[in-house]
Image 1 (cartoon, rainbow, N blue to C red):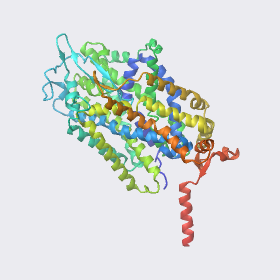
Image 2 (cartoon, rainbow, N blue to C red):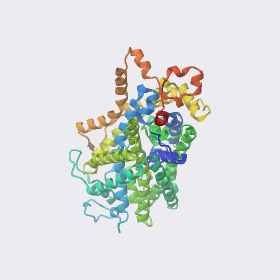
Image 3 (tube, one colour):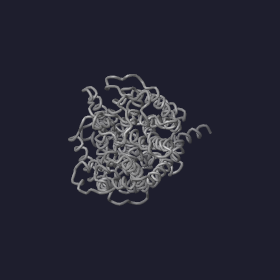
Image 4 (cartoon, rainbow, N blue to C red):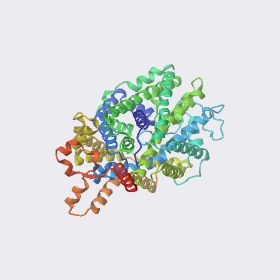
Length: 599
C-alpha cells in the first residue's frame, strides 16, 4: 500500500505549527517570562532552544521523513530502542484523554458569551453563595499545578478584605458552575451533562477533521492554524488601545538579570521550550513520515522554531497589555493580577472583558481563539495514535474505511474515559493526568534516550550521512555536537533537578491526594517511561546467541534499499545494515509477475 504524503509542504508546516503552537504559547510563556526576570528569561529559553530542543526537533522530523514510518516503525533505525515509539504512543493516548477537556471548557465559555448578561458578571445566579461579591480587587491566593507543561492549572481561592472573605463571581462561575467541584477524588458526584455535551461536540469535531487521514487534515489546518493569528493580532491591537497597556508590557519584558543566578529560572526555561515545540511525543515523527523523501525538512525545522517562539512573544504582548489594563483599572500592582493557565483563561480574562466595551464580543473572540489554538494540537494528538496503529498492520488496514472505523472506535473510547473528568470530582482526575502523564520528567526522559539512540548507538556520523542522502548536501557539524554531547547532558541535567525537587500534585490551596490517588498519578508517569527498558529486555530475550551477539543484532538498522546512502555502498558499510525489500516495490513486482502469468 502506497503511503499517503502531504499534498503541499505548506500543509506539513501548518500542521507542525498548529501542533507546536498550543495553549502554553498564549499564557504559560508570558507568565514564566514575567515570573523569571522578564526579558532575562529569554536567555535560558533561547540557549535551551539552540542546544536542547532544536536538535531533537530536527532529529524527530528527519527520522520520520527518512524512515517513512511512525511509532515503533521509525525506530527500526535502531531496533533496540523501539520502546521510544511505544512510550510516545502511551503518552499520546493519555494526553488525548485530558487535553481535549480544556477545549470543552472553552466551548462552554464560548456559548455562555452569547447570554444577554455574562453569567460571571454578577452574583444573582443560582450557583452563587452569600460570599460572592463584586470587587475591584483580584483573588488573593493562587495555587499552581501543571497542564502538560503548557497550561498551568490555577485554582483561585478567595478575595480578602479587612472584615470577611469574599469570592469574585468569575471564581464562583468557574468552580461552582463549570467544575461544580466535589470535596475530593473519592466523591465523583455524577456527570455534569453540560460539560459532557461540550466534550462530545469537540470529539465529533476532531473525528471529522482526521477521519480521512492527512489528505483531509492538511486542508483543515489552513483555517485552524492560521485564523488564531488573526484573532491574536486583533486582541493585541485592542489591548494596546487600553489604558495601562504599556504598564503591562513593561512588566512582561523588563529584564531582571539577577534572576539568572537562580537554578529554577534555567529549569523553567529548559522545560518550557521542550514543551513548547511539542517534542518527545512522537507526533513530529508522524508528521515527518508523510513528507517526500527528498524534502528539505532541515529548513522547515527552522521555520517551525521561529514561528513557535514568535507566537510566544506575540501572545505575551497581547496578554500583558490586557493585564496592565486590569491593574490600572483596579489600582493594584500587576503582580496581584497576573496568573497562568486556567486562572488566566477561565477567571482573569473573563473578568477583564467586563471592563471592556463590547464585552460579549471580546469574550467570544477570546474563547474562539482558545478553541482553535487547542483543536489543531488535538488533531495531531489523534493522528499520532492512529498512524502507528495503521503502520503496524498494513496488510489488514489497507482501505480508507478501515482507518475511518478505527478512528471512530478510538475517539469513542477516549470520550468515554474522558467523561470521568466531566463529573463533579473530575477536576481531581484531570489534575492527576495533567500533572503526571506527560510531565517534564517524562518528556526529558524520552528526549535523552532519543539522543542516545541516534547520537551514540546508530551514530551521529551515520545520521549525517542519512541527512545528506535526503537533502543532497551536508549540514553544519553543530547538530552532530549537540546530539552527541550537549543535548543529552541538558536533558539529563534538567531531569535529575526535577526529580530532586519533585512535589506531589495538589488541587487548590489545601487539597492533597490520598495515597491511592498519588500512586495512580505515579503509574500514569511510569506507564510510558517504563516502555523503553522493558522493550529493550524483550527484544534481547527474543534474539538467539550470546549477549554480545544479541546486542549487536539489536542495534543493526533495518532499512529499505532506497534508504541506503550511496556513500555506504562505496565504503562497504552495508554489512552493518539489514536491508529489507520495499513493500511498494514488492507489490509492484507481484503485480508484474501476476500479469505475466495471465498472459
